Image (tube, rainbow, N blue to C red):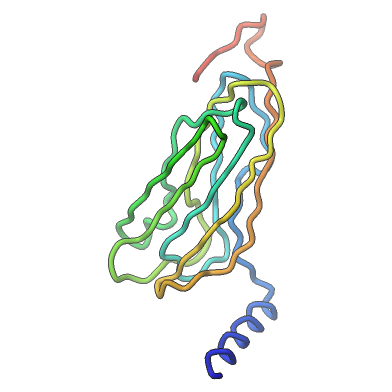
Length: 169
């Protein structure tokens, strides 16, 4: 009974302060040229005691291909980390994970979890659907969060003057 009361008190305190932890894509809406690289940050805000995280992102497969994924600086402020990712460009999705190592406290505040760089392979539009974000605290407790994805607009109508495009990917 005490556990239920403590849980209720915590939930009431979160609702009364109005502070919500959010995992989101920055920038939320992007426009990019075909055959150009596009980088997106996945960020967290208003988190307390973050020890590890995982998220999934999907997109329209033919339009984007993963070039690189790097760990953001946020979790590293707490100590050594283990970072991994698994892209599937054929199906248009990626799973990204990171955790602190050792018996240490998690980090609090706002920051970048990861940066994903894509090559824009085609003209069109795509949801950048961020989903199944899981945040874990130092005591292996799940930290509730809201998730906000984004949207991409990809065009071939850009380039250098005279129609000469600079291809980077």
